[in-house]
Amino acid sequence: MTSDIADLTKQIIEFIQQRFPATQDDLDPDSLLLEGGLVDSLGILDIVEHIELTYTVTIDDDELLADNFSTVAEIAAFVQAKLPTN
Image: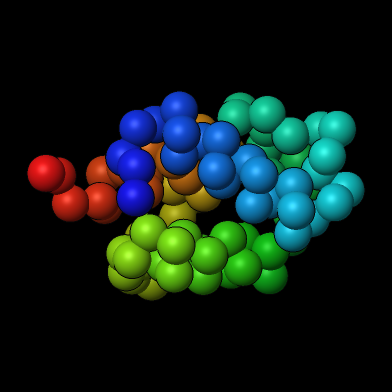
């Protein structure tokens, strides 16, 4: 799986747009997901589950912070930091 931040961002945006069709027109890497009303708290959990399954990483409860999941850009940076380096 890629660890390039641009690819991660694109893949995460595609997942969110597929899972939450209302985000089609309003989603960019810096869009506020929860605060902007694009995704609710259960939606964030869907995103977490997708990340864990897709990128084979474990997200601990103490990592479920607004700093990690407020925007797609923050999610992508968080995922990139969790991926093993080759």
